[in-house]
Amino acid sequence: MGVRNASAGACVKAVIIKEIPNAKVDVMVLDLSSMSSIRNFAENFNSQNLPLNILINNAGIAFAPFTLSEDGIELHFATNHLGHFLLTHLLLEGMKRTAQETNIEGRIIIVSSDSYKLTYHEGIRFDRINDELGYKSILAYGQSKLANILHAQELSKQLKHEDVKITVNALHPGGIVTNIMRYQGFLDGLVATLGKYVLKNVQQGAATTCYLALHPQVRGVSGKFFVDSNITEVKSHATDEDLAKKLWDFSMGLIKVQMTS
Image (cartoon, rainbow, N blue to C red):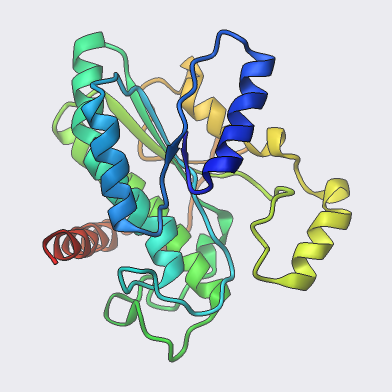
């Protein structure tokens, strides 16, 4: 488990071990808003030469006030998209090697959101990604979730071209009772008190993620968007191949600039 909060991660590990005594769980610090943290995590993980069959990109923040990450990138874009983009990039060779050596399909799952529909009118604000002028938290969140879907589609396309046995899919987990609304005090309180009556619990919210990671029915399925464990059509801006390639090149530029700085 890659976790931002080591003590919280240790508690989750303890719960897992209590329920499944034979489980082997490692907890490693990973802050998806920090490229240095991501690089350290990837270096530590790769040095262990462990097989990597499944990668679930699940970190997320929502509706935060305008903030730049430690790398100088708008926080939603940095955490929800670019962090996952860099992590996947650094772990991909290990996943390819595992798939080849075991002949078992690798799976990359990117947790997006139906909020991809609510983004800036240009989709991705490439020239103004860090511009506070015109910033709206709900649109910044939607932009990052659109980026998740485009990332999944472009990576899936590239892996198919390379004939690599790894699938990549994105999903909307649904409204879940978590602390993701913590930047919006009133809404966070509403979710905490009334959410259990209208939203999914954590187990229900994780169902589609687990389905994509483990179920044989999705073997060979790649580049799709899932809701409630079913393939769902997305809006046209989320199927724009030119936009997906532009985002890929833009993201590669950002991680390369940071790596050499």
